[in-house]
Length: 184
Image (cartoon, rainbow, N blue to C red; front, side, top):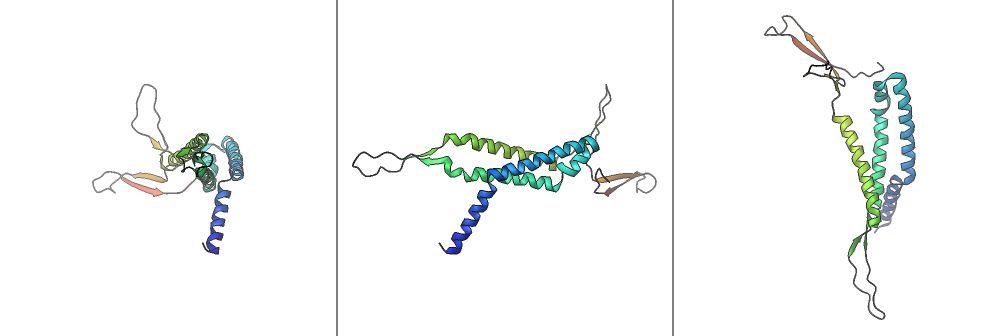
């Protein structure tokens, strides 16, 4: 291996160890805890939409969650070699070394991997819910039913114009996109 190949391998190893370190996990979780505490006070003072807009649905919060997910993944990835080992048979006195043993699993690390996998699944499930779900509100009076709901996360104003604008005499609907927030 060339000198530059060895150097780049050292750099990659150092970056992976830093990204998968317990120190980074503690730092990111501390920052997340402070941010969520701040969001709790924001929600009390300004309402849930403001806390969502400023903290929970912001880019910097998603970046922190992404760093935490990368940390968990790399921490588990770095421990994969310790998960598998070969049981070396003991040679009898005066004999040649025995052939390599069977590949075995370190059972003490299985809970570690399951816990980290579970947290990663929670993070990706929350991300999928946050990005691909639709929030809506439906008012259902007592002893009745409804088939309509109003989207609360819509980024479009819908305006219905009545009059002779439509070709068949029906009202014309206009959709005007906007990117507002609770603080506008």
